[in-house]
Image (cartoon, rainbow, N blue to C red; front, side, top):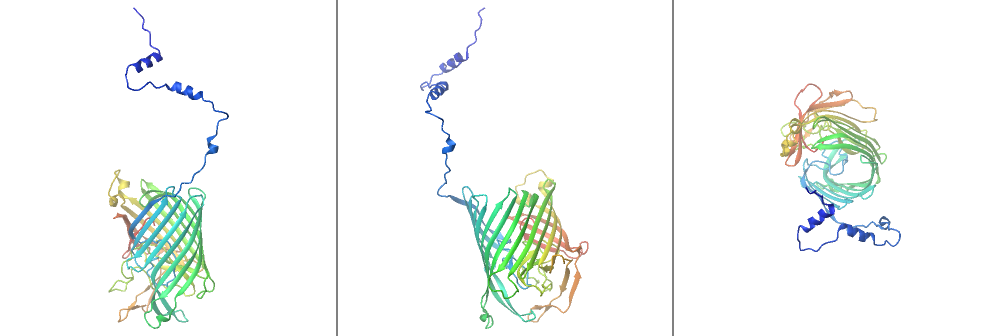
Length: 489
């Protein structure tokens, strides 16, 4: 029987090539090509291409739209410090209307080294408005930028006697212009040191409504403003209003009046503050969120902080509901101390269970505890496309806070001040004859409040609804209700 001889690899390849007939000429094999390349002389030492490589800048720089928005807004656009308004309220930072229209456009180059942002915000009264133009250079490790901010808001001018009592008031417009530069140095992905320097101009123009008001000249005040800030952010955003991790910042403000000082002994305003937030996961997207924040102001022109209320609170209507004498948003009975010279004002929030001005002073501390339960994403393993049901959350909160005048170590639990106004025949309200002071319910030196809330996304806005009770009993009395926009605390 004849033996079978196996084919060699070359014979097998040759027969495979001969099995098909094509219209193409035979091409040389890779082996022959390699032999041809190896036979080419190099003509000396090999050339290092990295030594001859160059870095080319792409010209011209190409920009594209990064973000654009036209929406309703309640948040502060840029500046949180308002000129002091002599204890009047409610306080709505940067505007006199609770809801404003915001138009914002941001553009950046292809490499995202240059970013330019412009924004315009107008109040629903069509009078208050804000303008913002921001340039940021993010090309190197050290980031820097320039900002121009303008705010026009309705205000008022008051005339006081020698004892500090208000004897007349007139409508006015406040024009604020801020020219600012910023620089930031990141130590790593989470930590950075930031410095901002600028010039702020506040121009109060009194409206001419009679012969007396027509004689008032514009009151223009110039400040040199600065802030040094250390920021740490090692948190992750796992969902709408759901974070995991720690983030905090500590900052120091120094404002110095460079125009003529007329209402204080010296031109300096100092403020130190911090804001620490920690988010701890409990089960899936169910988390506990805790926050501690404080501000301490000193100098000859202090900052005053009004404790109470909620950030982004939609305060529709008048402070006193028509037909009643009950104040809904701001406690006008708790007047600021007359022995202090205040230059600016701001809010100490969140302090639910109380309205604004439950306490005031140049120092403020706020502690917040909140359990956040996204119902569907925590209890069910299903994907929901509807934003309202997907982002629906239930919360339980406890808020503690205090505000006081004087040194940082003279803090104590605030007193609640009640006064039933008297309505005059012409409809105006004046303080009543009896004022009641009551020690507020709370823990230690802190005023307290607790309650429940719900929040979700509706028509593209994250809406929060909260009901808070003062910490003077177990669900005693009617709660204070809050409807607000915005994320986190």
